[in-house]
Structure formats: C-alpha cells, structure tokens
Image (cartoon, rainbow, N blue to C red; front, side):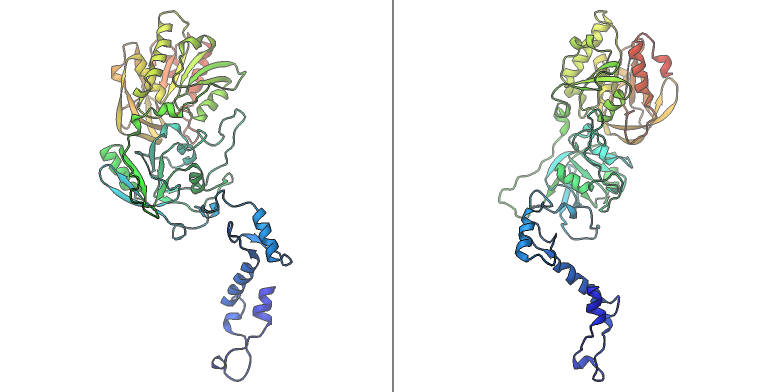
Length: 485
C-alpha cells in the first residue's frame, strides 16, 4: 500500500526539460509494474531492518522501535554463525547459483603426475593431501562421505550433479546408530565434483552439502573436469594428490603441502572404536564384531535380525572372548590390510583353536576388509588394485550358483584367491576385472563378501548373506555350501 501511495497516488513534477506543455503528469517508470515501484520497494525494505556490526542486516525493526533500542535487540539476538567473522551459513551453497561471484574462492587440485586442475571451493578452505579415487554412485553421497573405508582419500564423484537433495539432520535411531550416515562424521579427506547444486530440495534436508562440509572442516571443489580425472585414474591407477588454496595474505615462509600416501598409515586404527560398545542388548544371537571401520548400517542389519552386537577395538584379542559369543563378525575398513596384522593374527588364533578342537566351531562372517583379513589369516595374500572398485553397480558372480548380482563396493585392495589353502575356495568373483569378491571354508561356517550387502543406498541384492549368517549361529554344523549354491 505504501508503494502504491508513492507511485500511483502522488503526482510527480518533472523538470522543464522533461515537460511538454506546463502540466504535471505521471512518468512512465512510476506506473504500476515500473522500475520505480521496484526501487521504492527496496527502499522500504531496507528501512525496515536494523544494522549490527556483528550480524549485519537481518534484524527487523518495528515502526515504533527507536534505533538505539533496535541495536540492543541485535546484541541479544542469536548470531547466524558462531564466529561473526565467518561466512554466513545462509549464503554458503544454498541460495546463490554457480554464476554468483559472492564468496568465490578457487582451489587447485594437484596430482603427483604434475597435473593441476583449478576449481571453485564449496567446502572448508584448508590444504589437504591424500589418495585420489573415484566412485560411480549416482546417489547416496551422505553415506559415501561418512563411510570409514574412505578414510584419508580425496573422493571424486563421477556423477555430475551433487548436492541437489542437501544433507539430513544428525539423528540417531533406536539402537543409538546414526540414522542417515555410516559413521558420526565425514571420513573423506576432500570431495571433488563436476557441478555442485547450490539449490537443494528434499523433505529430509536440514542443510546444504556446502554447510555440512564447512561444519566438518572438509575441503571440496567443483567445476573440475571429473571425466578427465577419472580417465587419468583408470589409466595410471590411484594417484597421490593434494588441494591447495592461495592465502589472502601470503607469509614469507608459508607451509607447503606435500603428497602423502594414506595407505602407509594404520587407517583402521584411526577409525576404530576406542572402547567396547553393545548394540541391541538383550537380543537372541550374541555376535562379537571387530571394528576396523564398521559402517553403521552393518550393525543395524545385524541388530534388526535379533542379534546383540558387541563391538570391540581393532586390536582386541578375540580367542579369549569367543566362549561368550555365538559367532564372529569381521568389519569393513580403510587402507592396506597389511597394517592390521595384529587383527589378522587374532583371527588366526580363533580359527586354529576351532580347527584343533580346543574350542567349538562357531560361524565367522566378514565384509570388505573382513574378506581380506580372513583370507590372510587362512594363508593367502593381498595386492593393490590399479584404481579400486568403488560404486553401486559392480557385477559379481556366485561361483557356486553362477548367479550374477549387482553390488555396491568400496575397496582398493583385493585378495589373491589363488594363494588360498586347499580347504578354502573362492565364493564370489568380480565380472569386470575378475578380482576376488569373497571366500568360504569347504567344511566350516566361515565365509566372506568383498562387496557391501548392507549398503543403505542400495542395491540390496545380497542382503540375504546376513540371514545366512544368523541361520548358521543357530546351527553351526549345517554346511553353508548348499545354502550358497
């Protein structure tokens, strides 16, 4: 109504040079829908807000509130961010499109072969290094980014548009597990995408991907040719890389970022629980689970099947505890399996006791790194894949039934099944590169899967493996070969 009074009800006198005959007329720009109406609206809107040095524009001022009083209200009002000097989260990856110059900061991805790729930052601005790998999944970036198996890696998403459905809230389910994530924080060292969606929309979204990465202090770049990057990784294998940001003020001796191979670290120890935890307490089946970086949905898949899961650190001696449990679960995890030799020795002690008759035979089931650890405990070796298998569309064949299934995967190492002893055999095989995807003992209820049957973002073609594991807990003497065939 105020705009109408300004632009419609009040005549405007023009200077002589703009008037024809001596009369007063309404200029064209003041007619309804004209530019003057827009200008008047902006003036009225700006006069309705108070300014604060700590918050800026954003506190509504009523007509009856004096300026001094409004500043007091600003001081008492909650700030948009914890640090007033930080970027307002409302502006980070949520309202401005890719053509906006607001808060633009470029970062450079540097590969060990000398390639330098410039991109635009939409995450935390800090230089990091790691092993650069790619995943072909089209959905499920919240689950992928929180997967402990990605610890220390710079993740490239081959799907071009990332961030369009935002990030859900940090919530827990009835068992105390993260409801929407695979761990309690982002595990990747950094994220690389082709195009970041600044506008996100989903009924369960509580923040943008950019806001989440800033909160988690994880760098991210978009505007990089991920197709070129993926082809380079496929041709040369997983590469060491780092991301660098040009500082606003460059010191005389600025710290230099160097290439780092995260596989030289014991990544499983970094992501493993530091204390024993119990999930689904009181459930029927008692399972001892070794945590080398277990995903939340693996625990959930077991608890939902009436299992009580006792999660222990990666280096916990297992043989003395097996009397209290019905079976042993070996979790997924990041890095080189050779770094968890302590865990492998503990698994071997359990198998030796059961094979010698010192302890009753109990089922053992492993996933991902668990496949490699059980195979190494049996006497096989592992090797590093050129660029790993990561994504949601890996074809795997059951060597017993010859049935092919589509599986989600995330691993950079593989078990050499040809080195298995005679009483072991390969169970699954990847149809893309013929690498091993699972093993089984010929007479004991011990079996594994290199892929992820629990993957929350799918596919779930192989979730029946959890049912088989729970069935063997009730009847460990029943041969599993028939069920898998």
